[in-house]
Image 1: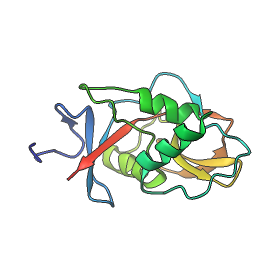
Image 2: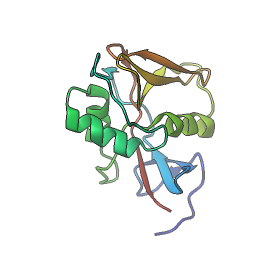
Image 3: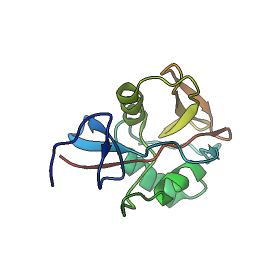
Length: 150
């Protein structure tokens, strides 16, 4: 595998735009665009503890095991370039996507896989780069990502 990925460009055969190295030293790729539609985070009222700001793959796995998390399910069902290992990015992973791509005038809130308390989860605003916690029953965009060992 070639490591000649260029930040901000489509990485041929990797299913998305190369975002860069994560804090965990993995190559991060984002789907070219958010999925069509909007999705609830889900699990409103469930106290979700032990979720990461950095590891969206693990967060997504946990959310799928619990069931009732449409945003995580939508991200996990996404495929590109024959890759089926996409997930809902963690808080800091999605911020890395915004930092790599820049702001977007028609940007919208996009869910992360990082819950906050028993009623909220973090979402990133692609227009301004802001991060807010929102009620999990709200519907926002989903931007699947995948990561591979560097």
